[in-house]
Length: 111
View 1: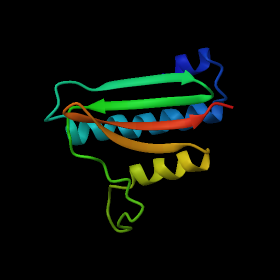
View 2: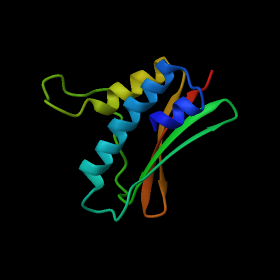
View 3: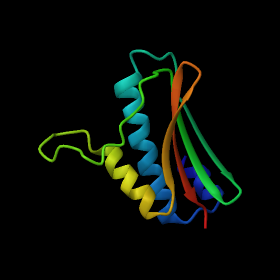
View 4: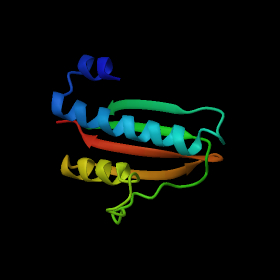
């Protein structure tokens, strides 16, 4: 993904934000949906001023973007951090059902 972002000449700080988000979303998909899905799909697109990352899996269980994560927990804050990062960059983090699974999407303004 880094090579694609460099080829598209995405600003380094925006590229790093998307890479961090992608790492978190993909690791969550593997951790939480790996046992119930036959495949995962990661798609990155650049169109109409938006840089978009989709992570799709076959698990219908929707993620919790958890703005109320337990401060004492050893895990579970990754999506909260991604959510803050995306909002700070002027983007959006969403999830929606697709077929029998779901897609978690990050959109960042490509300026």
